[in-house]
Structure formats: structure tokens, C-alpha cells
Length: 309
Image (cartoon, rainbow, N blue to C red):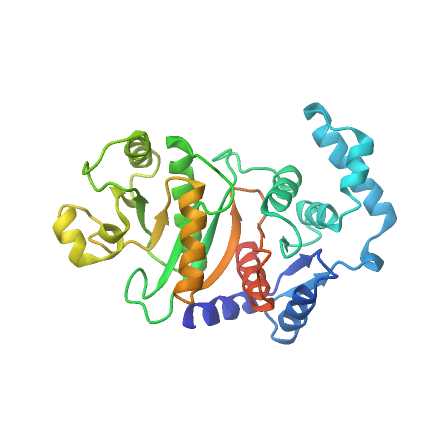
């Protein structure tokens, strides 16, 4: 797939160190070999011999210091650091690595919690969320089959401000990683007042916020997905929409819709799903689906490396 090839090539132009804490997962081990052999990134497979006991103790005390006001107990922090995931996240926070990728053997909530607590949330948004880069073969929609889907991993029921922040963060990723002119659709079961409901109201409010926060962002909503990505349908359902049925960044109204849609696209359309890429943090990192392949790990590491460049 051309998009995937370009991502890997871009990552390799300025190879970054990406930590892979799930050292005993065969898919991650294979991905580490591919990343190194193809020069995509500098993988650090975090085997026990690569963990410095003195550094680990320092990370434990630093993490405890950061989280003590939130009720963290030192014994509980020590237990957390029995998992290399937290060592990898602290390495990234300190700049000893450029990013980390995990999730082959951890849940999204586990990876997200480590990332948020260790890396910290970008003050511009005060919100961590996630997205997928979806690459659909033989597809004329989006950017010739390439889309960004958000949020598919973290925020269950986003309020209007959260929806707006998710849209901004996803659009920024589309521009930086895919070199796209982001065309953002706030998706719904309604198109421009064709139905009513709390979810629709949230989207209308989010659109108003987006126009204040990022006046130059090309965004519209509320839109049904066919009106968002099919020009012929857009002409019928929303002829005045600036997107004109050519959206390439799709913002879902809640986590149910986002997660279900990315998995349906992945399985039914044989699409490449890169992510969940964690957004809104002070350093780049990526989660993985526990059903990932070694190639999925490579792709997430490549995107994480580009974000660190």
C-alpha cells in the first residue's frame, strides 16, 4: 500500500529510538527485527537485561513524586514497575527514547494509563485521545482510500469540547504524518438537521467550538458517513457543505461508533489499521490492538518515529 510505504520511508529518513516493552511477544520480536533491518527506526526491545536497576529505582521514585498528590502509594508504584511498560514510558518522558509502542499484550486502558501518567497531557488540550490511520485498498473515497478515524480507543462519551479537541488533534496528525489537507467530518446518524437528539446537539456545539478554536480548519457536521465521504450523496443531502463529500478525517460521536467502525473497516474491507495512535500527550507513543500482526507493530513504530522527528 502506497501510504504505508511512504510512512515507513519517511520514518527511516531520520531514524528514532522506539522502545518496545513487550519483549516476550513473538510479534513484537519479529517487528523489532524488521524495524532494524529496514532502517525504519532504532528499536529497543526492552528485555530484562536492558533494564538498569538503579534507573528503575529512580523512575519509581520520580513516578511516585508525580502521582503522590493523586493518592499513589509507593508500594503500589513498585508493583506497577514490575511491568516494563512503565520503564519504557519513563524512558520516553526523559528523552532517553523518542517514543514507545505497546499493546500487543496489554489492554488499551493499561497503555493509555501508563502514557498519560508518565508523559503528561499537552496543555493546549488537556485531553488524551486516540486515532487510527486507515488505508482501504481499491477505494476512491477519502484520500484515495486513506483516512484518519478518531476517537476509537479512549474517550467513551466525548462532550462538545472533547469532540472539538479530538478533531483538532486528529487533523494535526493527518497533516504531519500523511501530508494531507485535513477535511474533517463530525459524524452522526443525522445530516444537517435530518434527525434530532442529544448526540446531534453535541456535534453542533462541537462544530461551533471548532470554528472559534481553529477558524481555518476545514470541518463540517453533523453528517452521516455517506454524506461525508461520497460526493454524489453530499450533493443531495448537504449541497452547501464545504466538504462536498470528500472528508478524510472522520470524527465519531462516541467510542462505540469509533471502535466498531474501525474494526469493521479493517476486517470487511481488508484495510490496514495503524493504531490506536495516542494523541494529546507531551511525547509520542502508540497503543496496539491485541489482535495485531508484526507488520502492525512496525507501522505503529514508524508513525511514532515520524511524530518524534
